[in-house]
Length: 253
Ligand code: GLY
Image (tube, rainbow, N blue to C red; front, side, top):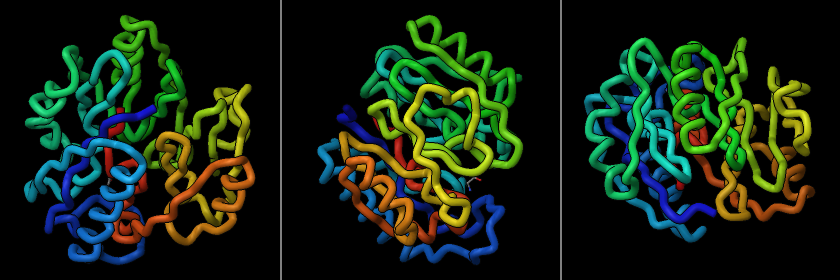
């Protein structure tokens, strides 16, 4: 169960965010509306949400998931692999201290963005990507081990982040797409495979029994509902334009 979430309002500079998509520039005003609805959805699902102010210096700072990992025992401040995002962690320690007594940190030469980390109970799957390196994954695995949790590396070839292609829906169930389909790392889980043309929806978000799914992916919605979940659809089109998914917009714990 999650009780809390932290979100950061989108910056006007969002349109300068890193992207690999060809979907055009995000509209700041629509992004702000979508972010408000996202926040309201988390509240509706029972979370207490702390809203941080926008940070104009960092166009990608709305994707707050990448800068910290919130576990049941400790929070871990990350060290983003994207150099333009590294300063996003400034000030996050003070915010996390409101909720955690133990705060760990990924340090040089490690890089890690928590969009590359999927929590499944006390296991944490860690994508090795352009943003998260072996050293970062090793450091996180060592930190987790100190608190009885386990890190499992998942080398990636194409995905930006691990969670660009996978979500844990609890109940031993995961949603996967593309290069993460048929991977030995996930043997033993009930797997819901997302069609290639709906891969963006592989980043959906389980919150206390309900799955938040991005708007526009009807087949994935059907599959998740068939597996017995309540669903809520929200539109995050403006964040998709800068490679952001549903989970990227919050820290949950
Ligand atoms: N625009 C989000 C990222 O590239 O990290």
